[in-house]
Every structure is written in structure tokens, then in C-alpha cells.
Amino acid sequence: MGETPGGEAAAIRRGMPVIGSDGLPLGAVDHLDGEFIKLMRSDDASGGRYRWIARTLVAALQDGALRLSVAAAEAEATALDEDEAQRRMTFDADGRREFGQPEDGGAPAGRARAPAPGEAPAPHPGRPLP
Image (cartoon, rainbow, N blue to C red; front, side, top):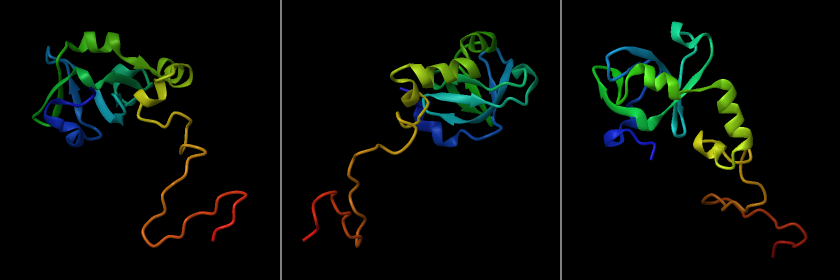
């Protein structure tokens, strides 16, 4: 889920136009955000606010544009605005993961990290190293 056809996610670039299946423009890519594509807020249709569309709406990358599998108006109707995206990341159990962010806002707490090659292991609290 969330992959564009043929694993083209790596080819999606900032500023790339997003075009509906009807040929009408929806906006321009700001960046990938987990299972979503964040659209720039600088285009006329955005009203000065970021919007997120599901990556599953991408049909193809064609002629330097992101082509959607639905009409631009349908994609706009399903787009998340800043308020909804923030609500999901704050209140939904899976919301942060959907947007490709750690569930707690940072590195997992309380979990041991394996030392890098040549690095000494970190001491365990309350137990001296041999």
C-alpha cells in the first residue's frame, strides 16, 4: 500500500505537477509524507494551505507529471487539509505511521540500540560492564 505503480515513489520530486485523470491540474508535489503526497501551498487551488492526497491515487508518472487515477475534483474532495492531517497524527492510533512519522514523535524510547561496528556497547543502568 502506498507505492506508486512500479515502485516509482523515488521518482516523485518536489514541484512535480499533479494532474487528474481528466487532465485538470490539482497542484504540485511538496514531498512524500508516508502514505500521502503533500501538495504545495503556493498554488492557486491550495488557498495557501497544504493538502495531502493518498499515494494510492497515483496512476503513473508521465511527462514529468504525476497522473492520478481519478479526476482532479474527486482527488480534491478526498484530500486532507492541514487541520485533518494534524488531527489524524494526534488522535488516530495509526495516524503518525500513516504520515511516515515515528509513533511517539522521535526515536523509540526505552529500546536498546545495537552498537555500530567498532563501537562499545552502552552500559546498562544499574549493572556495570565486565
